[in-house]
Image (cartoon, rainbow, N blue to C red; front, side, top):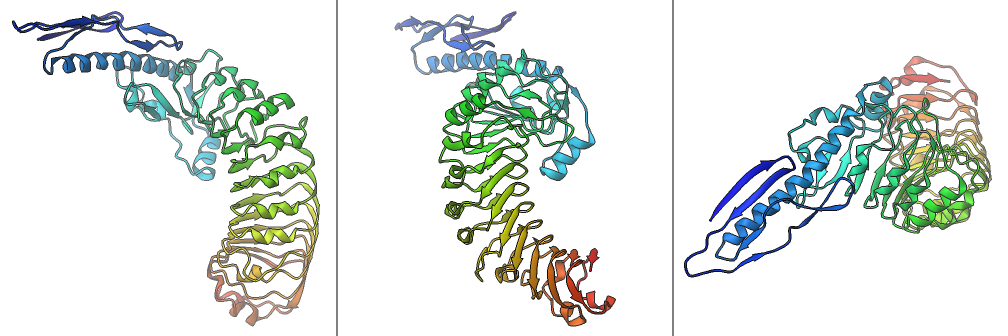
Length: 468
């Protein structure tokens, strides 16, 4: 059997010439297989297809033919990616470096520099392919310094098999977000955060019903925020039944009632709506989502009391309700949240004392209750929590004496602007052997007295800033 390969203007053409043994063999002609064109339609591969059913020969021919299918399908994807690359310039900005490397913990560099015509795009930086048919199924160009307008006819939309798309931390020059993103119906992960898109979030995003993770956050200050109207948001909440992680920080929702989130999926694990200008009573149903690990609602205008149902979130590790208009007392049920690592309720008008229990919050690392009307003595768990790195109780009405902190990890301690009392003396600091990591100590504007001596702080080797 001989196999000939020829090239043509339409791509690789495979010609098979089979010669059977004198004993005879059967030859069947079948129709050529289908592959996807750029627009998602199906087209026939242009080569002769003959299968010889003799020994291992047919398997060789079949493998060669399938290789041709992969080559042609992949070449369409590669061409689309090259055109997508060429539609942008590379522009490294200080903002991009800072937000990627310092804030997000990502490496910032131009990934598309590795994209060369004539090479296999499945080997390019940021590109992942399905090895069976060479479809591009994932594209991660986060922090890639891409700059320029993002047109609605971008060749990116010629990749219908995408399952994961990450364009975060690029700058698309205040383009409107194309509605064509709604074509990617196979997507389960979409991250367009901090990309410089402006205008309204297109309602077509709600067509992406397979999404497990969606991030449209925009919190870099020189970007204008997205806006989203009531109907688009309702469609998003109603249709994304598979979503587990939803990040919409910085999207202007001033025209939306917070109760639009009543129908959120009970499987939701992360919900971040920071700085969205949400108004009205805090929606109780958000505090009834049983699988939440992360809930960020800071920087809105939510009012009312923190519901007791908050204590039902036994898996919650991150909670931020800061800078709202919440009032009343911190519910006792908050002590149920034993998995909490991050807790901030700063910048509200909460009053009363902090719920107390000696062994509360064994995993807490960050605590910020500043700028409220809280009073009473600091809770006992504050001194015994083993993992605390940051404590901020400033701008409240706490009273009583400062005790010894047990956390050996404590780096930032802000107790300023309260009614704490006692005498500042050498023993107060020499008896704090656990504060070797302390860098910032603010005790100013309290009712403390005594004489300050520099030797008091000899047991605090890492102290950088002190305000008494």
